[in-house]
Each structure stands twice: as structure tokens, then as C-alpha cells.
Image (cartoon, rainbow, N blue to C red):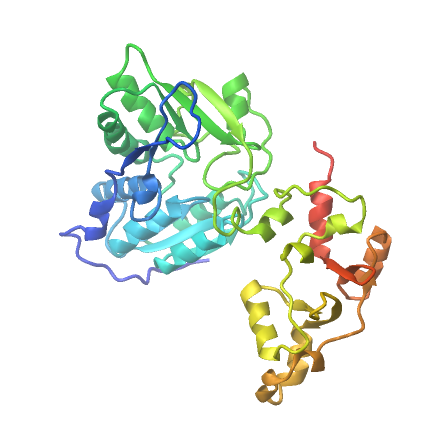
Length: 422
């Protein structure tokens, strides 16, 4: 495939004002929980205009490419990113008038994808379940696109020396001055390795006698923790945390700088994930006491207020809006006594409104299906599969008490969470 640049070029004689806000972020001491014998400080990199520390490397790598002649006016910036580097590049390169094309693994949070698009970047979604060397691996896809697009510059944060240089020149000196030259340990994650390498180089230079501990926080499933502990490269697993953890040792990551490492779990910070109970339940991060029956497969439980429902007297327009806002194609119809009396899906809506949109004002009970596929909690997986074979979703009822729905996705999520570990 061949693509051409469509972004207009702008004059570069005066840097966009937004870029002056990158860096010089505040440092704050943690005082509201026990930090043991130490004082703990956080460098608030979310105060950068793009919301993360990656704004620093985006600016550094783009300016280095301009200085080297690798990026010309009207050019295209191409990068593979599973984290915030995409936001930083969309901000910096977009402000400078370049076209930005990002290759993003499908595990990236939806708000980040929406954010980079809002900043003008184009997005290509790639698979997150493949490793280096596979034609759909996100870094390989980005490198291929950069070769095919005239005037493209492949940023390659994993091998770009301007990445750690940003931290050696800015982040490290800021911390050193803010801490009044009194620093004993720094905790970092490794995605590309730029933060680790840049900070490690700076602090080894300014405090060579006593040294500073560089502590790695690595998601379970990444190979980096095991490499620090044993010096061996193991087969990678999978993890949901974005932006840190790797299945290889990045070219710019100087792992010899790490003095200690810890594994962290997948309960992460993103609004569409950690603060979304539906996503947390589907991933198995909300721990509920098991019942040993079919109710364990219900990821969204009615009694916990997790099920999007509609009442029989609600309008079809209300049902449609709830489907759209919740990104679902069907809703259980629940009466005022909490009983599931029907189900309505997109097909039911279309049958009613396709000839006369005024029927959006009709009550749900006139369009819903009341022939329900109900199962008790004591039903078997075979009973559930029989419901699926009939093209239905299972409604789990304990006598007259509606517990929730079980879909094919719920069953797959349950089986994945209970698969034997390799």
C-alpha cells in the first residue's frame, strides 16, 4: 500500500507556544499513606500538555529529526506506540504541521485512541497478541508504513538516542534541583527504556560516589523483571497495563542501570478500565465470592446495579439511546418489581421504526420479545450452549429474581480466566 502526505506545512521559524509548556513539572511529597522510613515524592508528569512524560521524548525526537534532515516540512511522522508516546507525538508533530500516523495495539484504552484522533493523528489498529517478527506486530507494521509513504520519518522510540537524551537533559536535572541534590532511589517503568537510561546516565554523573538505586516497576507478563532478576530472557506473557513492559529488550534500554525490580499486576489507571466496573469484572479484577453455579458467569449483575435495562413503559427512543450509550445491542426489560419480563434488541427496534420513525415514541412493551430463554443458576454449560445455538442470550433467574444475562462473551471470559496457567 502507498500513501501520500496530505498535511499542510507551516512555518517553523517560531515554535508553537504549546511546546513551551513541556517539562518543568512539579514534584509533590506523598503524605497520606505510610511510606515507611523514607520520604516518597512523585514527579507529576501528567502536568505536561499531552498528559504524560512522553511529551518530553516526542519533542526531543522530532527536533532531532528536523536537525538531521530526516523530517522535512510536509512530512509524515510514523510511530508504533502502545502508550502515551502517541499522544506526545500527535501534540508535538501536529503542532509543527506534520501528518501523524500511529500504529496502535488493540489493547490501548479507548480514551487514548479518541484523544490522539482529536489531536489530528491517523490511527492503524494492530494485534496485541503477536510478537516481534509477525507481520501484524505493531512495530513491524509501523516500519513498513514508513518505508512505503514518501517523506515519512519512522520515529522508532525503542532505538532513537534522542529518547533517553530528553531525560538526561531535562527530567533528571529537574528532579536533582527540586530534591536539592538529595535523592537515594528512583522508581521507573520501562516501555522503550528512555526514562531508565536517561535518568540513570544523569544521576550516575552527578552522584557517582554513593550512587542512586534505579528501581524497575514491571507488569507481570513482561520479560524485564525476570531479566533483571536472573539475567535470562524468558517467553513473554500478556498484560493489560499500557505503555510499560516489553517482550524484548529495547535497544536504548540500559538494563544494567537497574538495581532492583518488582512485578505489578494488571489493575491499571485508565478511565475506561479501572474506573469501569464492567471492564474490571470482565477481566476478573473484581473478586466476588464464587457460588459454584451458572451465576458465576454473569459479569454484569443486576442486584449490583451493573445491568443496563429498560422498563416496559419506557419509549423505544429511550431503549435506543441506552443501547448506543452503553455500546450494547440488546437490553433486558425489567418491571418495577425487578422481574425480567422481556428483552429488546436492535432488530426489534428496526421492525417497529423503519417505516415510521414516529414509532420511536411507542412503549418498549410493544416491541420487546417476551419469549425468554431463562435458565436457573443450577443449569449446566450444555444448557447454556443450547441457548446460544438457538441464537439467544441466556437470562439467569433464581425463581422470579432476575440475576443477569450470560452472553457468549461472558462464557469466553469465564473460560479464559479459568484456563490452566502455562
